[in-house]
Image 1 (cartoon, one colour):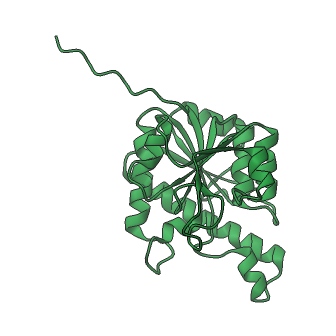
Image 2: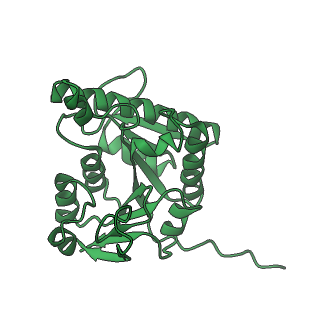
Length: 244
């Protein structure tokens, strides 16, 4: 009898996938581009089907960003709450797309809104993961002045995630801005200490400190690359790994 091919070896069993709201915009002008949304969800489904426990933390910058509101005269606290509500819209869009692909999903909000999302409860989130559900965290930490990067670092620490995968439009971390400098060098990996010493913009300082203190590695990769998240899960060389 022909032997059944062995299942691929998974390097990370439980991950936090950090998505900026901007990635949902794609290359168009719509806040949520349908084609881009579907492509992102296909990558999530791909690793979910491998048996990976997936949590998604989504930003809201494609709709509203608190700091941008300040420039228009909006109070910072009010602007940050508006940004948190934007993440809820994005989270519901991801939930809807994943559910249509047959992926069981739960949305948990840091701000109570019982008609559309569960409240964030750590043990309930753990149980969803054990039942093979994708958990989407929205509304940030529920507090102004904290970014969704900090949310990702906090949830990763609480849920004992193996890694934070920060999916962006850039293929890793460079020693300087690659859009402005043709000689910019990309790192395959770098330590937290070296990233701090070189003042590399990996995450905001609060999020970065949480990851450093709780030994949560961060992998920065390009979401637009086909099967990027799957390749990372299988341990292939991709993006830039930040670790102790």
